[in-house]
Image (cartoon, rainbow, N blue to C red; front, side):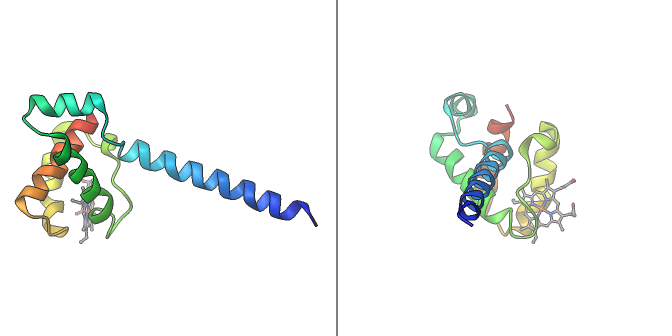
Length: 106
Ligand code: HEC
């Protein structure tokens, strides 16, 4: 009897951690190398952070979080051209999401 809550808690921990991992590989947090790569394209850190937030929030309205590494770099501008209209992004938001995706892609 006493074991059940422990197993339930252990399961929760596993689920919580795997959830985290999925998010970080699909849309990794903005980090140093990413910021440096973006700076070369005249994109600042705030833009990247805002772009990632938009991706997490607005690009999950119709489907699960798109995985940045699942599409080649050259394909993303074309995909985003289609998707930012669907997500009702302003041109500035569109640019931010694209900048984040390209920086995260590496
Ligand atoms: C209003 C609904 C909607 C929103 C919001 C939306 N999508 Fe989509 N997305 C779709 C649908 C429907 C498909 C599958 C059909 C297609 O490719 O047109 C799709 C497919 C995709 C694919 C797979 C494309 C491929 O060619 O394999 C990617 C990647 C994607 N979306 C990224 C995004 C991103 C990034 C955003 C945020 C800017 C976004 N989506 C927002 C509806 C949406």
